[in-house]
Image (tube, rainbow, N blue to C red):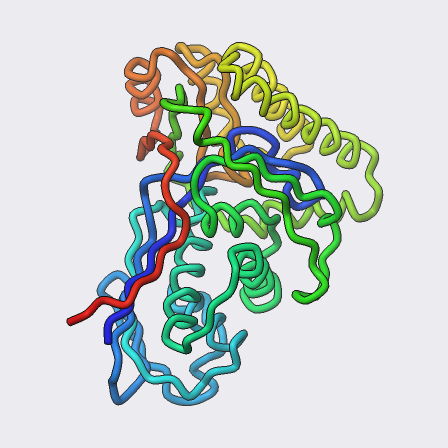
Length: 330
């Protein structure tokens, strides 16, 4: 039997990072996807990532080792299934550690394939919350809920995370409200540029999270303001009022920058984009390296300038399906 699963990356248009603080986010999935192929029966549990293969034989092999195989280890540990035997191939088109949910797209593809093997089905909200538990408790990643819901649902969505500012056990979690916007939008005047610098979102978000938990007024009020910007940004997006959306996106970034949560390389590219034809530019993810998103009616010029200033990859956001998983007849 062969099982094929895939999931998209995503870029945050406005509202991030308030998905981890009871706020709201407008986010768009990407055409770029992670792909997993699970093949069984086999005599062992083996995983291939980027032409490198490992075999999990003993329980200690399931302990995290800070490598690309950890997503599979974490899913199997969460499911408490150390008895399975299969071969899994993992590939991705999404730049990893770039603020585009690349690791989460891999994780949900792995989870979906293994759940299919086990004959288990869950609705999309529950699947997204399972991902959040795996990332927080098994991969020890400090992040919000945007990545999990976007890789599962796909499309372009307004997502409301009210009541989810504090972590709960899986069966006590509140579900986010997901409002698809794709039927009202066609082509988006957005460009995503990757700086080439990798980062782990947990290392970026944890200091801010600590400040928020301590009641730091600047962080608390700043993120409340960003959530309000997102609510207005949803209207601007649906009305195709791009100049208003641009003003809101720029303010979103100014707040993050003031809090020290953007990163020097991101700030440099954002400044370059705004000076060369972009109406707005901000973080597409957590910051600290990674990726920016620009709103522009001059994409060719902006892309040329960004490449000249070190952008290593350009992506055009296109709303794409969320996680898919199918058994392929051989």
